[in-house]
Image (tube, rainbow, N blue to C red; front, side, top):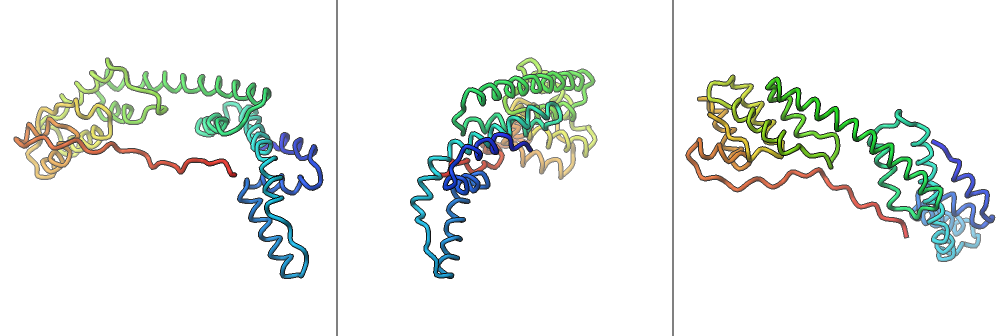
Length: 252
């Protein structure tokens, strides 16, 4: 990882600012306060004067925006230098992190380049994903089509209405009473993980206790099961969400 911008920032600081900035670059305000507490603890044990935490806090707060910017610019420079070798999620993380930093003109230029790269890479992935989905539907590979619908290349990508209708149709047609039990169960489980699940209308349920139990379990997600079983349609299950990350808070 490049440290060009961090080194350039440190070179401009006064002797009293330098150690504070180094701690900020290591871990933000928590690192500064931990270092001050440790230094004062040692000073007290050795009978030396302690330093005023409030004074150090003020210096740190004055430097915080500059150190955050230097850190981001180093990450941005590294991402630009890595090009296609950088993982997509890492590129997205650098672009997203720009929202937490006060950018200068140079940083805005870096961000523009990174955003353009991200857009290009996402478009390539979306094109490939749509091509795979079209091929799966054309060959009536129901399991593959459902997997692709459940896992788009990024959160903003949605299945087109036309393609959703096609996937619903081949999925509904596949779920017949005489389908292989293991295959029927696989398709049901895959369907439940998609956004089109409530539109799927299975033709039948195999004469198998495990399949019937699976249909009962998922009748809220696939309402047609309730009709096939002669039961009331239960309420839909709550939406499944990825665990939310704790919001990144700027140290203060």
